[in-house]
Image (cartoon, rainbow, N blue to C red; front, side, top):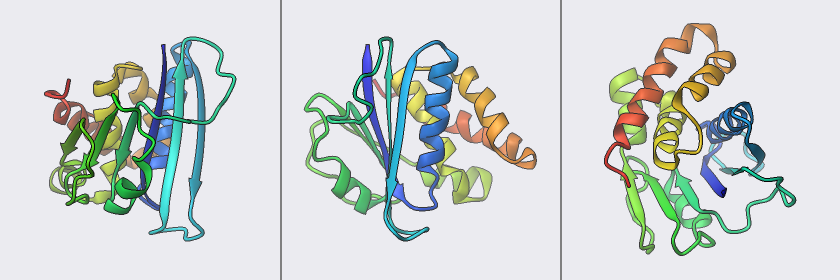
Length: 177
């Protein structure tokens, strides 16, 4: 098993943090993981992407060449980062911030930012909502493992909200196959 994932959005949305958490959880479960990131010169608002490879074998080339899954949290990210997605791959879009669906056969639209704002009061938690959805959709790591790493990485006063964000994402992805 080897899966290549690309999480994309704009700077400040937390896609890099979500990718790091996913990779940390994979390693904790005994899998191999490689994680990389790139972002524009703008600290906030510019395009950003983070990539994760999770495998049960040694990863010799640590860069995503043809992702199996692309998460796009903005329209600009959707337009820019889905083109090399594997033909049988899955494109996951934040329904709130990606109004135009790219022409791709396997697309899932989830209300990621909307859930974060309506249920937790801040778009800040959208990356963790997305992470919860990714965990359920991919089945690459256990939700409990991700919870442990989120608890270690986020500020203590936000742990409860982040746990709720993970669960919101997990629940939102219930009907995704």
